[in-house]
Amino acid sequence: MLTLENRTMKNAKHLPLLLILLAVSLSCSFLKDKTSKPVSGAPTPDFITPGKSLDVKVQLDNKKTATGKITPAGGSLSLTSADGSTFKLEIPPNAIEKETEITMTAVKTIDGAPLDKNAPTAVQLEPSGLFFKEVVTLA
Image 1: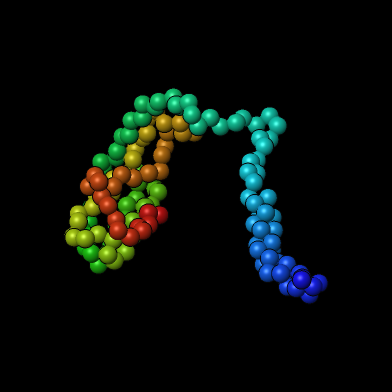
Image 2 (image 1 turned 30 degrees about the horizontal axis):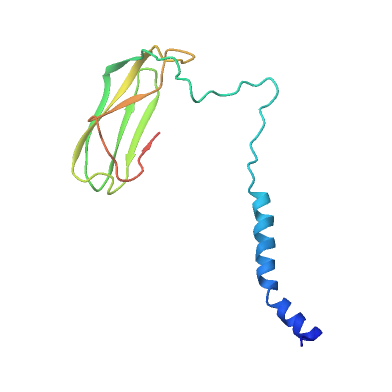
């Protein structure tokens, strides 16, 4: 015959399971999809339809170049473009596997790009396909 004490002990065995189920149930309500609603009048971005293609042409300023050999110990390369913009490429140790000659060339124009003005502040790095194993800085 079950006494009140036996029933309480029997039900107490299920208490941890009930607490776990309660915790899971509550946490699921916090994980519901909480998508933001667009601001009234704001355009909704379309990530499905392909955008208009651009015919961008980059013209380099071959008079404004800098070339240097960078070793696995690291190094840097600096360049001042025709408009006075200064670029410095800093390559930390172990960023490249072998000594590599890197060329930095100032960009003169970028035609066809959706830019406010056609006087870009940019450089091109060569050789093409250059790969760094560490984070480099171009300032």
